[in-house]
Image 1 (cartoon, rainbow, N blue to C red):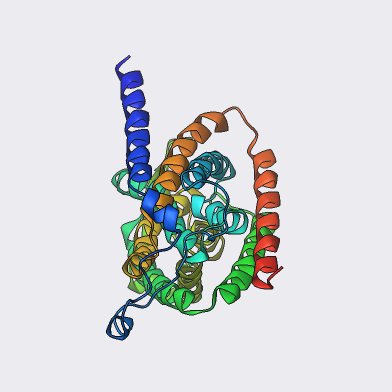
Image 2 (image 1 turned 120 degrees about the horizontal axis):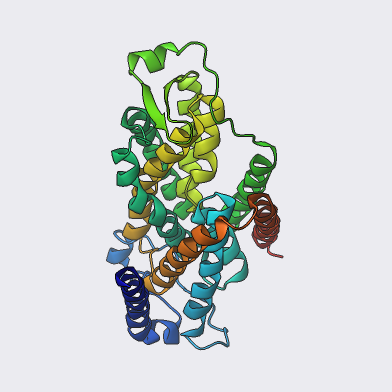
Length: 339
């Protein structure tokens, strides 16, 4: 009974927060413009606007309709993301940018916060349980954070249609990775590479399913770090996190056991996405009217998805997500070409 009351209280609090944001925002959606455009020439040297509109001025829906629709959509995306085993930002950015009238910069800014929800909640717990490895995570976090900051700056500087073309191409790449990548629960690493030995990256974790202690080490550290630079750059530029790439690189390329790779990836996201999110926040590309319903919907959906996951075969959900990403990727490319 106590747990039920706590869950009800959390849901009520989430709706109160969203209602508060909606109630404070009619002026924003009535005018359909932001204050990002500098008012004077002197301001133009300081403020670098990322966009001048949240949604098009010819939109016929009332100002409060789109946040409510966004909440419903992100609730469904949160369920699918958990069941497909991918980050929420991977689904959020291409689908919302392709089928909602929000400016692309605001969608990417919100996407980073959506991608941050799970990792921020789970990162400390995974470290405490010994599933995420700090020695493995820190050098990768440094590399990916630098890449994410550079990617965020590049993404906000490039024309929107160019970024949409690149996003569509990246999403199609994610589809290919999801189709061909095969995860190995316990990769075989015959000998640790020199760099990982110098950095003392190795460990032991307890596998509860077999009650065994697994001794692991890694290889190909140098080329993997180069790949993580590109992963961080993509995460910052497109605002969709990097969970879709972290696990394959850690598991298949470096030889990290699957559970350690997944756990360390969660911890990495809490650092990488935060680095990129500050760039979007500083440039004014984070709008509460978009972020709050998206984050709340994603979090509530993920909680439902965890419960449904036990009763549903993951492979069927995986192919549904692949179809959605394929459609969203083609839609992003079409928008990039002005179609």
